[in-house]
Image 1 (cartoon, rainbow, N blue to C red):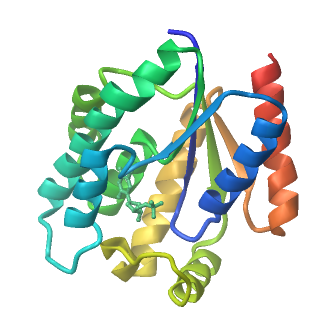
Image 2 (image 1 turned 90 degrees about the horizontal axis):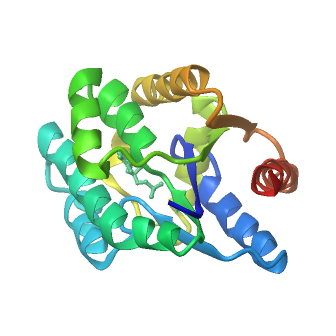
Image 3 (image 1 turned 45 degrees about the vertical axis):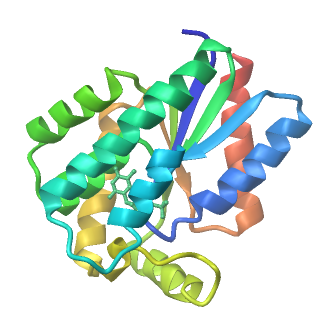
Length: 210
Ligand code: TMP
């Protein structure tokens, strides 16, 4: 398949969504054909799922949560990501399957085997070409999400998790990055926004230039 598939990952409050906006602006100026998207919620069905199982106060069973993230992803891969890659576009997604390893695997405690199987079914084996992991200490990330609560960011059920949940999620991301070091780049997200932005632009333009 042509095109390039880039994903952004990080714990909540890592600043990746802001960085995605800034990166997209920069790449479009450089005349790259970019499709930006997100999980969950990259398709109309995904947006309805997101509202139904994430932006709710209803208790959601962990297994239902795992399968709903997978359902969102299956729809996303089939109707948005694969068609765009076929048209040789650059797809940049705010989260993808690594989030399920980190949040549902390490965070909720599902086994790696089970998470692997579910991801394989949902994606048909489609993996990103490049993944940026925005890393910063959990304490600092949590301070940012509580600040953001006063902004227009919609709260989601994950915001109520304690810091040890996020410590497990962050450690899992770091382990994934170490295991798959060809695909992952770890970004120090504990720096001023503009500095993070220039790190991101360098990594992505180097990658796309290859
Ligand atoms: P967002 O706020 O970055 O859009 O992410 C939504 C929340 O969903 C965030 O807390 C991470 C979580 N999430 C998972 O738990 N598993 C997943 O597979 C994905 C894509 C997101």
